[in-house]
Image (cartoon, rainbow, N blue to C red; front, side, top):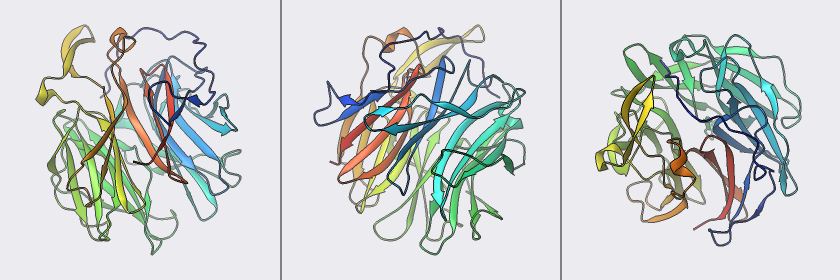
Length: 356
């Protein structure tokens, strides 16, 4: 069940112009704050570099998470400017959240959740496809109808053609992770449970240099990132705690030139990195969502010796508890990485950085 949050209403900000400029704090990086005309709450970005060289960013935007006026929007990078985002998924009686983009068999796919107001246990997953790199879309269809089904990250497509889509089920008694597998281009799906995955969710999968699969998970208890492995994407080991902290926020993992790259918040309740926040009239501890860090592993995720802070605490952060979170990370080619994340949930911030 989602909680209604008490947060300041975002007003128009001239910084949110979408223009990509050199970063003032990250040498060699470029950045932009995307336009956010559709609502004060902007969250859960997902990036896609299309086969024609385009770059798309999708997220959910509206009054607040769980509100029926919250919809999925999409923006395209044209030259050095992100276009004004347009609404691509809306249902006046439901909240549209957690959009995911991927490309396969000549089509761009958009998946997203759709739930009754403020109740994630009612969510189902909706699919749309585009034959013109996201400019126009098919009519929506319910892909996974089981109530409480959520997605956050795109599928990994194996060399043999199977699609491995990480998902999770939200229930009254807690959440657990699954992998949806399609061997026929998304027409039919089998579900495979991740054993021992209670309260570890938003699985993100990448292939390790040795050919095996590594998955990392968000920890609902705000302790550590958890890890699971598989040889085929169907049978997974029970997730185990890693040495990387987690603040009950999404992380994303990807493979880049034989190495693994991860973006996450280097914070957790275990390390007493929290602030007091008020939700539904009650005070509670919430792990901070800062700093946002890029880590790189050269041994399949056993060690993460390289770390770079992408976004740190600044005076603006202390205006609210929302932080810098929910990153999307993709290989941009040519030695570059693309990152997008929630910027205090006022808008989405985009970074283009060099590979370490």
